[in-house]
Length: 553
Image (tube, rainbow, N blue to C red; front, top):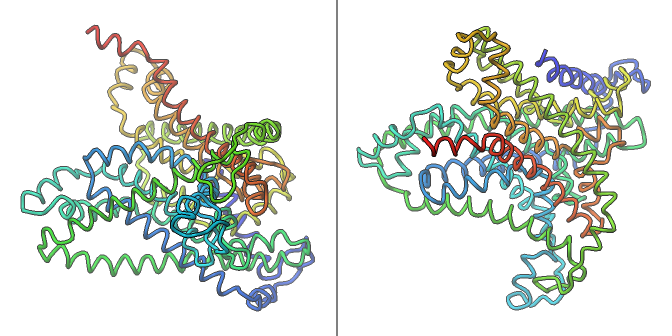
């Protein structure tokens, strides 16, 4: 049943995109199959450039994110800096992609804080320069934003993989043979880790190649990604353009598959080189460079992500901030007061959808895991691939077809449709967050309850859930964070009737009041943070007497 909830809209959505791409869409007069949509798509000027832009930026962002997370873990695991980055990861991971993108604009735009910090003393600029920096035509800032968001995710996936690998004994054994710390970890542990995180890496690749909201903010109008082009065609008033949009959505799938193929070929080539490097017996060459590089990449991720949000916070309370002043010359909260009603309304819609989607996803995950436990099932990689299907499939490729499904069953623009579409992306993250702690729970807790006369259901509610309260709440907080950042699912399922913080922030990013955009970006970031804070504070409050009893004993 859970797989039907997640896979049904994806399968129906892909069918609803593939059929119109070949001219079959009876609702719009397409009664026969035709290649006309594909010919119109091929004739569109700039199509090749858009597809190539999506292709290389997605590959570059995935490669840099994986390299940053892997090298930093290899070089600094067990150190104070590693623990500090662990504490920084959760806040960064909870911030939506669009909020990070807006923070990058505030930081790196021609009138951004970075230019202010060096002007006019180093640059001589008394006015913002006529430079395209954020967004930039080369995609550098766009890639940097994706790296800032995906590095923390892959870092956490690496930490999760290390719980299933005896990394400390392996690394220690390599070090006893004369290998330096970083080289030992990369040669003995990294191959096992990479095997464990292959699926999350592919999910990052698919997202980076096809992301739309970040591209709308950080790519020029004259040089869009393929996903942005497809969204423009879907929004075109001329309904005949829907056929071209469907063909473009299918092309987006092809671009993602091509990127995945290139990644796989790169894996094979890198694997051969890696095996040669392991066999070479080199024990220290490159150690210092890897340590410095890993620290620099992790620091850059933290600085860009953190400073962008700090500058957004400054803009939200700036009454007057002229270039090249580093700080506002006048401060005021009147902008918050002026837009309070609109912000609260958007925040209410955002929080309602996120809370319901996260709660339902947690219930489904718990039901699946409990069923798995009672029946003694051991799901293989196939089930995990099916669960990841919504994350591996480009959103723009199936959401249009899924919207057609909603129109057919009369749910287009309804609350249940928006929540359902959010669950497609919230559910996998919630399940992955909860499955590890659930499966590692000592079975003796449940066995003890059953031997005392409790039924399986009573043991679940009275023993298992209280013990796993914190992981359950953390999984719910992850679900809220994922839901808050959803843009395309809200636009397509909501039929433009739902104004969330994310949809408003993306809509106003191009030409809205900078203060209002900053307030939206901050509000986007605060809601997930509050979710994680609640996940930490609620168990601490409920079980506050445990520490006292422990101290008494």
